[in-house]
Length: 485
Length: 95
Image (cartoon, rainbow over all chains, first blue to last red; front, side):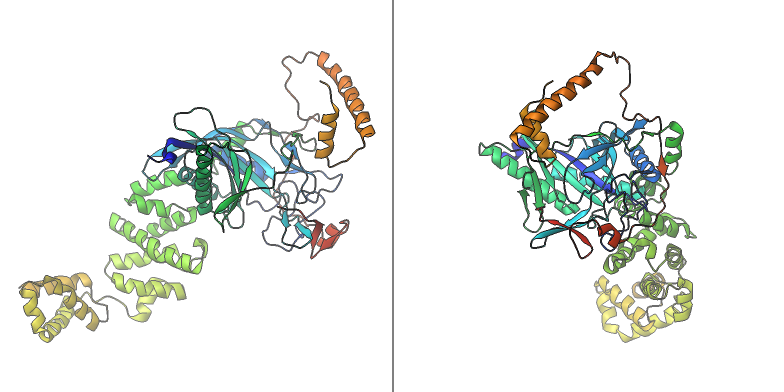
């Protein structure tokens, strides 16, 4: 047994989700990403003296949505507090956040682990706060500050230290990512920083109940980095303890290029934030009626949808998982499935296959969002109908699909335009097969001598002369009859 | 509770202010006087009184999520001691 197996990690995550509101949390400036520097600013988010922040109602509603989706208690009254520290990207000298009375508390989520088991991770709290601006450090002598992001609404989701491995942390983060996207409250774009994650990590001998000294890990801006960085940090701490050294409480920054976590320059006394209630903002009171109204806006969540896809459409667990990964894709599948004339397991699976292979492949290659995909779900469903009723073969369908990608035409129109209708006329197929068989007497001999796999050769030859339009099922049947007969 | 010179130094540091020894002495006394004055509140019996975060009796003051015109970049940077390429320019900070 390796020394690593005698230890366990204790991990808690703090996830910041940038909300997809149109405006900032306390002023009417736009939250659009990528605008010219310092163009989405006003006296409020610039921290000018004498201004008054006014809370964006949508932010509260989004917070309640996430709270309900993660089984939290929604606080009847919650207040904002000032977190005081000096940094150039924080013009006011304090961040407006929530401290003693956050909007959501005491929730949980059930995450899926690879082995098929589920694990419950506690949610300590979810609170509303404002984002800071951006500093550009890669200058020789100065730092440049862009305040556009300042005041962008965030929800900070704090988990209990319930995770025991980097894998579990990954699955928890994935769950949160998927949930905020389904709820339509955050676009989940980790590269643009819409979802950010910090981890608190400590290790202890298995069986020990006391917590070890923790380190905070920041700057992990992708799922892969989160897993790798946490794994790195767990190993580092075990090695330290194993060599007899103590773990120092500190903040580490993950360096994705070098695959190491380096200590952040320690800001002495920086953690004395002197929180106090913000006198500029009044309490947020959420009554039962408001909660009930928000509850109505919560869509079917991924886990439930996954289950339903398996039950209603008889899809394998894997298919259901891929299709429900994102809400838009799940809706795409459902719209396509809704077009089916014969609503049976085979056709549902066919739609699923087309989405998982062709649709997703093109989406990834061309970086297209589901909503912008040239083949509408209605057209995809109609195409599967054409396959199901024998109008076209699966092979011809590939050609139709490629045509739909380019022209956005209805599959029926494409089939007519290109004359792709499958030949299901037994007589016509028999005629072609007789000609082929006459051409290959040797192969017939070999087939009858036991080389059964030559069937494929005959099917191929027949298809070739019929330009792919012969009904493969009929060709197979007729060939078999003639060869075996 | 009594404030020491160490507390004053700590608070000064957090506020990024520097004081002479004489000033620190003076503030230590003043801080203690203020706290002593505030201690009078401790004589009030607050059993069963909910803590208050806000003295105005208002709640739920909201805005709708509608974009309002922003200040121009030029205007925004007008009071900045230094700016460059539409950014506020500050002494180098190590991130």
